[in-house]
Image (cartoon, rainbow, N blue to C red; front, side):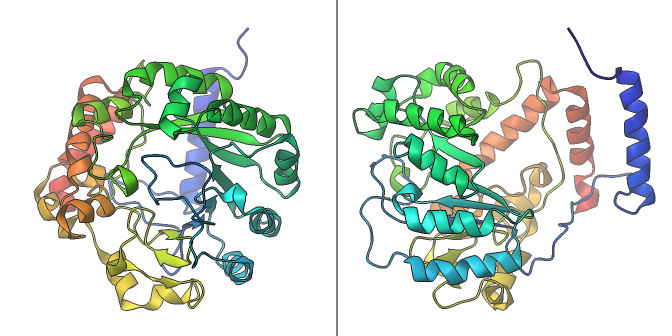
Length: 385
């Protein structure tokens, strides 16, 4: 039985809401697409990922941070305490605690959760492989304030997942960990990395995670960490297929807003040794922004390096400056561009072809509103410059 308001009544209410937002100065009507200006000043991180440790109980072949044994220069509890106080002041919207495997550092993890979970401004989550989550640990995480967990799972069967992760019995532990999280009331989002090892099972993996999780993400393996330069990377055709699998079969629906850059410098990554980088894919000495053992997060936004990073746009990126879809993709990933070209202003060859094909697919098969917005964006590219 269907429920809810008739569509006509909702449409009227929505029109009134939009007009209210315009009257209050929150929204404004524009004849042409224009860049979305951030609601925050670029004088602090918008979001933060904290790699709590380099230690991990698994040895995944595509790990972006080469996790394994604990490194001598990893952060300790006394480093975390002042970092948490800085985060409280800066109030970045999302804060993700990752690793390695963050659940290995129980005392540090629970402390961060207890200190930050009460702040309504912060969306707090933990990224884990799920294998260490007993019923008792799940309850402790919930009691400390965790409400969202992201769990890695790369196969729909024990045979496939254990083969990818390199350890027998891991699949059962991960599924049990997901169940334990859900039993105590923690929302579970699964993240599946699709590589040459499991691409042929893309459909089956998608159906499996749909059944066991509250939500899921399916991503192509990134050209970074242990996977860079290996045969784990997918072909452009297969990478495109993975991306398109995330759209509804009834038509491509996605939010399209003009953007002239990626999120480098806004979505900060703190490595396990405390080094601060512009994002998780830009862990290069050339763009190290500082270290939390020595620098305050707010102070690093005053240094010239960071200011220059924040000023870069598609007009500065290789072939992007002449490309018709440059304001659709925003120039791709600067981290990937650097890995392939040794320049932050080079072209991102990993994403370039994918975005072009995606734009064509939207124009051919997209939902009408999405298609219209993209058409308007492409037509106005010359005016946007």
